[in-house]
Each structure stands twice: as C-alpha cells, then as structure tokens.
Length: 323
DNA sequence: AACCCTCGCAACCGCCTACCG
DNA sequence: GCGGTAGGCGGTTGCGAGGGT
Image: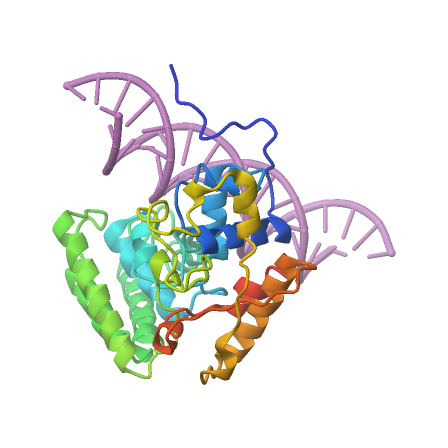
C-alpha cells in the first residue's frame, strides 16, 4: 500500500524560502499559533508542504533561536550529551536553549567530528581512536595524548563559569564501556542535570545569563485578534475553540488571510520602559508595516512587561534575516 | 579574472512513533 | 486491535560562499 506523501506534491514549491514566504508563515503562526502543520500552507497562502513549513519555523523563524556558532561551552555540552545520547539530536538540542537539532547536527558533522578526530577521539564512540585509524603512536604515549586532549576540552568548559556542575556530573555519569546506552532513567538524570545547570546559569554571571530562554508557543506574546483578552497565541489544542475573533475555524480562507494582517495594534512604547526592546520593537514595526503594505497600521503587543522580557527576539535571525 | 575545490548550512527525504477513529 | 494520519526525527543532499590556484 505504501505511505501517502505528507502532502500533495504537485505544484508545491521547493528549495530556499523567500522573505515573502517567511513573512507569510510568521504572520500566520503569530496569529494562529502552531497547529495542524498540514493545513498551515493552505491557510497561510504558501505553496509549501506542511512539513516544510514546520521545519522552516522550528529551524529558522522561531523567535527564540540563537544564531551563530556554538560557544565552547555549548560544544562541550554537545559532546558530553552525544556521549550519553548518541545521535539523538533533538534530545541534545533540548538541553541547549535556542539551538535546534538541525543546527547541532550540522555543527557536529562539520566541526566537532573533525575536532575530535584531530584530537584522536572517535566521534562515534568517544573513545580514543584505534591504532588502525590513527597515526602510529607508541601505546602509552597515545593514551597520554588522548587524556590530555580530553582534559583540555574539559578545562575549556570549566573556564566557563557556569559549566562545572553539568560537565562533572555528566562525566561521572558516563558509562565506562558503551556510551550509547541510554535508558529512561539515564535520560531523566540528564534532564535533571541540565535543568540544574541552567538554574545555576540564571543565578550567575556566566555564559547563559543573557541567553535566550526556550519559550513555548503559548508564551509568545502575540496580537491575535481584536479582542483584548486574546493577547497570547492559542496553543494547538485551544486555537480552534477559544477565541471568538481570531479562530481560524470560524472563517473561510479569504477572511483568514485578511485577518492575518494583524490589524489595529499599537506598541506600548509610551507606557513602559522597554529598554533594549526599543530596537526590537522598531524592527517589528518595520516587519509589520511591510506586511500591511499600503494599509497604514500599527501593531500593538500588550503584554505585561515581565512577560515581554520572556520573549526575546534575536534580531539578526528574526528580523535581518527577513528584510 | 576565471576556474576549481572545499566547506557550511538550509532544506528535503524517508522512516518511526504517537494518536485517533 | 487495526489502519490511517500527522508530527517528529535523523540522515542526506544540493547549493552558495569563500578561498586557493
């Protein structure tokens, strides 16, 4: 019988996304939340398959993404987590706020693998490379070399002020023989360790103090309708039932697209001290203005300020990438 | 300046799993 | 319990940028 393709591929666009497509997708997600990816392209007016939309959103457009190279500490985290979890990139990514599984996977394949090999460590097993694969070194010397390399990485990680707990705990927890073993309990331990590590980070001046927190879709503060009560994105479970004004289910497709233009908002610039948000807000203004085109409208996000601070937009990826 | 090669990253593909009727 | 569907995940590919010759 075979599996049906995820979508009707006839007439669907493939390849790199254009900024116009990005805008459409962003507007749709911000207005409606993440729900039913299969329906997203149709409702958002995109000639893409739902899968492609989901990937584009999660890997590139999500506002909580960090861009740029992984820091040394993040690299060390990836190496340690990979030793524990293997190629389970999404699990690894879940411990690195603002990083996607795709990004980590790419970084692993292009950077870390090479780095480890160079240091005489097998990236697959995290053990010293066998003598067959490595240039001939006298056995004791080789061992010393690998140990030094490992110590070097760990030292680098330790230098990151907030990294010590997770690194040492992960190392202690490492299975001596097979690093790819991962039971549920082990994963739970890793989760706990990572959680405690990030707790620590928030309290220190270390690497993560100004990092972007992972936010859930419902935490993204979005003007999704005219009603003052609907200031946050509905979750996938609630998006079709709760809102009376912005629920996609209550519109035909033509109206939906009109309503995606995020009507009648005003930035709360005069009301609150937005601090560094000024730049972001200006960028948003550009973004939204561009979308509404000749309809001169402004857009209002009306969250409490403390909520505002949770939604940190990486301007480089989120704005510059689009415009 | 032109060509070639390498590298990095975004995107695609296909499989797996969870969920629902 | 079974089949179908959607979402998620990991592996792979293709293309553009940058560097070298």
